[in-house]
Length: 267
Image 1 (cartoon, rainbow, N blue to C red):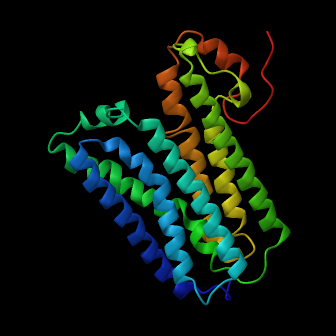
Image 2: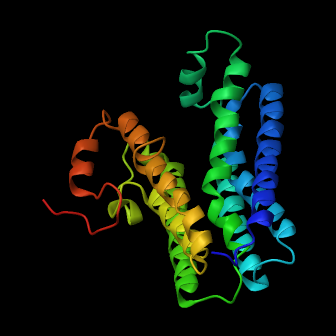
Image 3: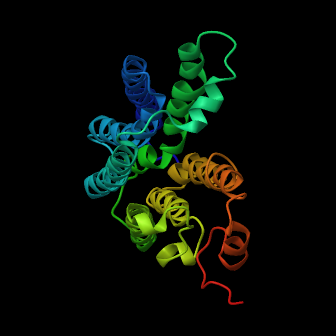
């Protein structure tokens, strides 16, 4: 652990926090102007991309160039794909019911409440979850088989996310499917292919930091927190609470895995 550049990394933590804050405050200003807080979901992927780019610049002279380029590129591809997907999905729609329900609880100014409870909280989460992206860029030495296993896991996750999102978008675009549950393609193997994909992406990025014990130790909290968010927080649990009263959902849930993919149960 003595070889890890702690002083440079500590400075990077501050720069990464500033990058995440700038993205969220800029998004907040735009959301207030448009009266639409759902656009903060677009900023989620953009925030990670900003942190990766700032870290790449700050880590010059440290770490391994191949790893730095790879980690930055993987993070940006994942983050920008997600941002574009969410932007397209929300085009022409009003406020997200989740934010409507949250802002209804505000006892004072709704925008100030949104700033505290949505934007600053998401900015803090971007900083925390991005720890592997930051730490990996300060890891010296070339990429090990473990690091390449991380790239493969990231690729699996991105495929699940992108393919699952595309399948769902095509399903919803067909008027014949109005009111029906999506239970085809990847959605027949897991009720949440996009969340499972996210899970793989962040454990994959974590593995890219594991060639240096110090980087691995400081980064482990990231995939653990992301896994909890996806399964117990604002991901799977919240969505299933919203979906459980829909006709046919109980039968779909009985035959389809709740998270990790597996063939659907018969009968």
